[in-house]
Image 1: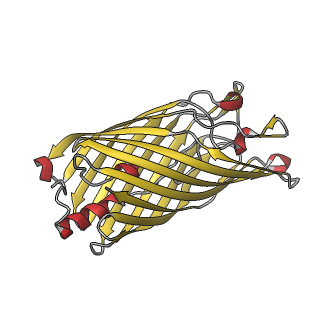
Image 2: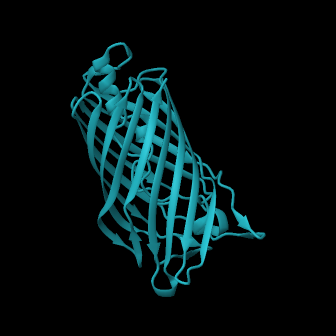
Image 3: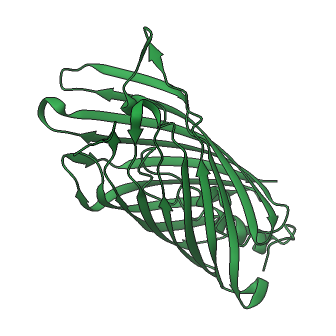
Length: 299
């Protein structure tokens, strides 16, 4: 079932609910604890020619280090996303983030920066359909490339700390797989992705990251769905000029709870929160809850 005929309200309603079935990036710009493109790419079975426009806002905070070296950081990220399905089996997407960050040290010194972040390009392929186009089980591959588009922010002719820059300014290829189960009112998806980080601004080299994300959704009606999920991340330590940061990397799992609401036939509102549920992080690291709200519109 491809939902190509939007004049059928039931099919359109199911498709729209499934499209909002997973969260965007609920994590920092380097660690990405979550499948950060699935909302834009769409968790439903895509149809050829679909163009989707998305806008997401995320707030998160974290702390690293101890004593006089402790640093608290907060981030507000708004991302414009565009996705187009060339066929029922291939969807291409681009995400353009605008980021505002702030860091504070124990001596109450603050730094703030804002600007364009690193742009993400992503492709998703459907390689398996059980039962053809109307099947309940789909699976495939996904690949991506993060581009070093973020400029470095300066004040007084001096570049601000890398931790407050809008993004790392690094080239990051990624590759992974995904699986989806579709039987309204239930939906479930699992994805695994590996990110290979290159060197970015100020000789910063993010640790490579392996992600596993799982999410289940129950549609209470054609206009309202509840979501629960978990995201697990294993990452290497970050490096500065070849020296490892002891307060970086390790294992983190975060639980997600959210809601998706359909407004009209093509507009979706989704909101949720992500909380740490298990961790084995290196050194001194504290990950706080994250909150997000987003809109997507299908043309």
